[in-house]
Image (cartoon, rainbow, N blue to C red):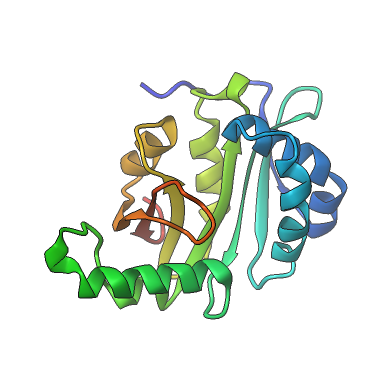
Length: 195
C-alpha cells in the first residue's frame, strides 16, 4: 500500500529562476536523500545549473506546509553529445556485443532516439514512503512530448526501485559502471505517457 502524501504537502513546478534561488536547498535535499558527504553539494551545483539550460528542462518540487522543499524531480530532453547520453550509448553498444557474456541489458538503440532524461528525483528521508516520489514523477512527466523516459539508479533493492517497477519501468541496461563511479547502475526506461 502506498502512503498518501501529507495533506500539507503541495507540488509546484519551479521555473529556472526559482530553481536557481532554491539551489542550495535542493542540493541539501539531494545530499540527505542520497546519504552523500556534505562536499557533494558544492561539486554538483555547477552541473545542476548547466542542466537548467538544456532543451525541455522542467522541475517539480514538493513543499511542506512551511514552504520547505521535501522532494524534487527534474529532467530534460536527452540528446547526443550529453555526457549521460554518450555513457548509456556506449553501454548499450557494449551490451549488444557482449550479449553472449551474460549482460542482461536490452540493447535496443530506439531507447535513445526520442527520450526524456529523468535526471534527478529525490525525497528527503523524513518524508519518504508517503507517495511523494510517485507524485513528483507523474507531475514531471505530464505532457512530456517524447516516446520514452530513461533514468539511472544504483543497483540494489530500494524504495526507488519499487516505485520504478510499479510504474512500469523496464531494464534497458543493468550493472553498468559510469566513468568515475565504482557503483553498478541500472538504466531503466518506459514508454510515455505514464498510465
